[in-house]
Length: 151
Image (cartoon, rainbow, N blue to C red):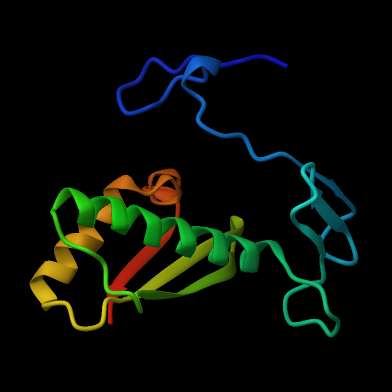
C-alpha cells in the first residue's frame, strides 16, 4: 500500500498525524446479496440491487443517509460560528440517483434542506457555510452533479 502526498492546493495530505477518525468495514459480495459490517460491530447490512425485492439496502442509500447526517452536523458547526442555533427540527431529504450515459454509471444528488422558522436569507447562509465545511460536500465538489435546495 502506498500513501500519496498531494501537492496541489486544496488537497489534504494523507499523513496519519491529522486523522480525526477512520471508519473501517469488511464487505463481501456486491449489490446482489452481499454483506458489509463495520469492524466495531455497530453496523451490519445486507445489500440488494436498487428497486429489487428484498430487505437489503444499497450503497446509494447509505451515501444519502451518511451525507445528510454529516451535512446537518456541518451546518450546526457553521451556525455556531455565526452565534445562532439550528432549529431543533432541522432535516434533510437526500436523493442519490444512479444514472448511465455513454461513459457508464455516475451519481447525481439532491439535498433538500429544511430549517423551519429560520429567516430565509439566514437559512441560506447557514446552508452555504455548511456546504463549505461538510467533508462529503468537499469530496463530491466538482465530481458529481449536486443540487442543494433550501425548502
